[in-house]
Image (cartoon, rainbow, N blue to C red; front, side, top):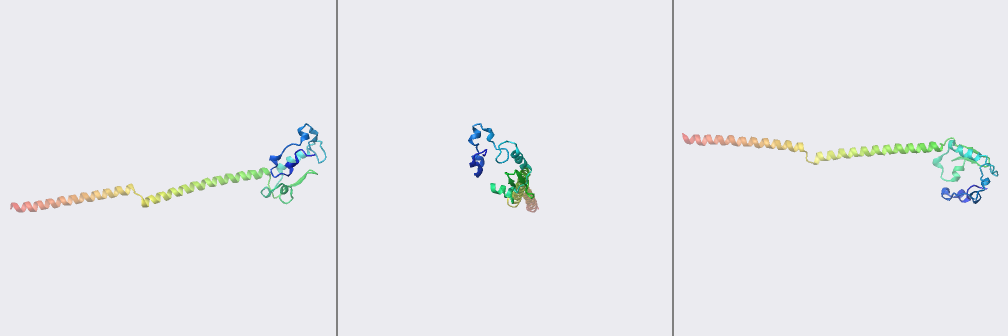
Length: 176
């Protein structure tokens, strides 16, 4: 007799359909199948087998269904009748798989942050370059203003000198 309802055994979403059979719900705990098939003694052999899953190697990325989990090629050769399990030497443990996945996510996260920072720096440099070409540079405008002011002062001085020369020529000639 099974411990859980048969629907969960064949469902693609077993966790949603998982429920105890009515005998166990009604307190018949001797019906719990914790030993070898056909024995309800509860000797813990199945629990030990489940505990061994921690160190069992799987090709987890290739597992798509329950049948893949039980196949010799992709997952584990799981023999519940004789309570034996054969590991796939080229696979990884569940813990190793999740640690690797988390590490990959962390590295990808750092790489994405670095790329964002590099792109921001590149955009900032492009904005500065664009402004230097097309925008108004305060330093350049100030330099031009000082240059034009000096030219105006020089022209004013020249006009003043010419005015004085004309004054000397015109007024000096008239007095003689």
